[in-house]
Structure formats: C-alpha cells, structure tokens
Length: 379
Image 1 (tube, rainbow, N blue to C red):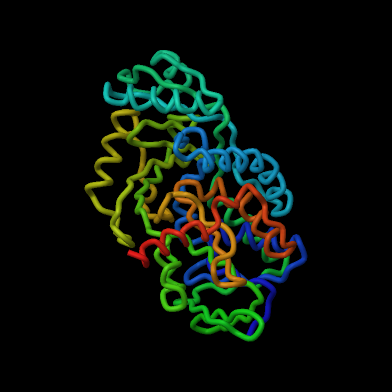
Image 2 (cartoon, rainbow, N blue to C red):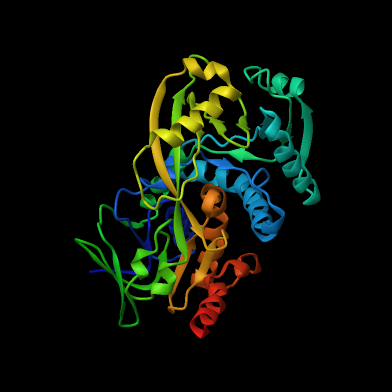
C-alpha cells in the first residue's frame, strides 16, 4: 500500500496543477487516474483563457474569479515553462467576437454591453475592421468586438509540462487504474484502484464531469455534477494559415495554435457520457464554421474528439472540503477548466496544508448545496 499526505483522484489539468502546488509546499502526493494521465477532457479542450467573452451578469462571482485566474496565468505560464524546460504556447493576442448573420447582432451587442457593465476591456469594431484583423472572415461579418485581455495556451503541451514537473517533484503517478473507490481508514482515507491501494490523510477528487466515486459513500455529492458533451475538430492550417487570433461567433469558436493546428468547436449536448462523435452536432459546427470562414473548406481534418464539461448544479466551481472530513473537491469548472485550474490549485493547496481558507473560493465550497438538500428532505 502507498502512503501519502494527499491522494488526488483525477489526472487532468485540475489534478496535475494541484499536485504541483502541494509538492511545492512540502506535501507528498499521489495522483490516481482511471485512464491515462492527461488523457481525458483536458486534452480535448481548446485551451482558451477567456473570462471576458464568457462573462454573464448573473455569474459575477465566477467572472471575478476568472479575471483573477487570468491575471495569475501570466505568472503561472512562465513558471511552468521554466520548471518543465519547455514551451506551452501561451499566447496573448486577444479574442475577436463577430456577427456573421443578422440574428447574431443582438446577441453580441448584449454580450458587449454586459462586459462594459462589468468594467471589462472591449473594443467595438465594424465588419471592415474585423476583416482587417482577420482577412479570411466572411464578407457577411457585419460587426464585432475585440476582447483584448483574453489569452490562450496549448492544453496538450501544458499537460505534458505538468506531468514532467510532477515526476521531477516526486509525485507518485498511478494511471490505468480502472474503477477507483474511496473508504474511510484509520486516521484518513483509503483509495483503492484495480492494482493499487493508497492510504492518505486527505483526498482531493478532481475527476471532472463524474463524481461516481461518492455514489455509495455520500450519494448527494455524486449528484452535484453532470457532464455536458462537447465535440471538437482539429484542422491543419500550417500550409494555409487562416487565423491568427481566437475568433468566436454565437455558434462556433476557432482557436489557432502555433504548430499550425486550428481547433474548431464546440457542440453543447446533454447526452450523458455518450463518447461517440455524432454527425448532427458535428454538421452544425461545420456549417457555422464554414459560414464564418469559407476558406476552411480546403483545410485537412486531423482529429475529431469528444469531451465532457463538468457542470455543477449552478454552473459554478466546486472547490474545497466536502461534508466528509479530509475529502475535497476540485471540479465544476464547466467551460473554464484550463483557466481556473492553476489559481484554484494554489488556493486549495493552502487550505489543505496550511489551513488557510481564501475568500476568493469561499462562495464555491460544496457546502452551498447543503441547504438545498435539507429543504428537499423536508418536503
């Protein structure tokens, strides 16, 4: 049996950033994943760091945390590249949001006004000005705005770098673990995988869109998250560079990477853990993409993939200790996994090892749903 201070269940962006943060503070860490480390939804994401264009007035706390997380990213990216001795393609060109058809105009104007009310930096553009930034945009693009503060990263390079750092720091990695279970032990918890058992004083569940590990132990925790399916395409624009910036419409986004990859996505489907790439949603994404950038017709398709966004009951993160003493959550990031994970990892690591509860994540504690369950039981 492996003995450790903290066992992290889940080897995606949330788990690996937390493992790094904990070991930097002197903790011993084991990361367990049912599959390959970094092989889940974190590897499918587009890597956009965009609290601005995702902003909604009713999500002010989430937007504020996203803006704080983006500020931290500037420092974090440099640290990762130094520690891993590799580049992660961190880019700061901003995001261009455009209206391709008449129905888009009201949507993007509303989004623009919301961001103004939140004090976020945005610049209104005419269709001509949009095409000056990105010349391959369709002639039907009538207007848009530029969000100057949004950034992006190559999520696959980031995952590779984080794994390298964790291995150097002595993090014990258990992958291809199959079904993982959790039970109370003497002075802590026992995490059991198919071929390994881990004894830990504290456990962090960072399993993305599934909290099935709690089904027997604490069923109400298992119901706090649902998967929202997203299908994406990876295209090769290395021989025909079409875009330099992240471009979004109300129907589709494009994220260009420095290696010539162009990520196009993404559908949003309530289909549970249906991992099949299905033609209908893919067709809708492709149609919206072609209407925005007609020259996409010529690009080779490199990959189609499916990921599952972890959506909590209120679409806000789940960060901090649960009703099970010594068991923490680091999930519920929904559309912002790559953006939120580094800052959330720092704050959770402080809570676990230094017993500091930061005000920035107090609103995201899983205990916020206890009242809801109490009211349901009283009905």
